[in-house]
Image (cartoon, rainbow, N blue to C red; front, top):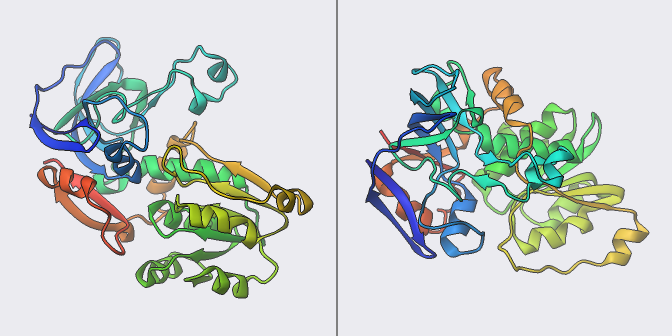
Length: 329
């Protein structure tokens, strides 16, 4: 079968590999749709730790075609991959902090993932999606990660929320904050993403920090940083009201540093929080997609075959691009 393999930092290619077999407790799925994530580009550049050679792809939907011993799922069932396999025995797992597992194995990062015709995964990481369309189900993982960040930020009706970054996480965050009853402003330079955010429920949008401050002069109750760049992380405290909170969802390259003023955070008692992965949120994400609470179709910028995925990952995202889906079939 064909698979998109990261062979080393800066070396990604479509390769022929053997079709995998499910072991005990695993399922083999035919991949129906898989999303390219910013993390895939970080992996390609060596900015996020992984274990090459490895087939990338951690946001995917598939159909079960074969089950290993002890699996209750049935062939033909459609599932979404929840890619993080916690050990269940380390200190963090025993505290319920499975996203901080010391021995976490991530599908598509540490073991072969979904940019392939077929993939194997533990059955407990294969979440049934029912009749949800594959291109919708492929958003379960990024929505689950965003949901975790919004859970941490905990917006409530009547609060003001500024979302920094108009990528897929930012546009999902706009919808989640809106659904929580908050007044939402998105900040991004790209006019197409600003227009999309307003369509998806943002009260207003801004291209610059100054324009955002004009919209919410006293600062927002909650900032959701979803761009993953130093500029927006450093901007976040300046747009936060006294007593407010910041949640960093964006992924900066490993080793990159930013400048903040601790005295300012102290004197205004601003909470600076972080959100990592999707602990216990993917089932909720699937339910929200099924119920139509979140729109994902407008976030699909283009759909490509498996053979185009290496180039799409190696290249910088196109201007205005939100989500690229790979359809292996």
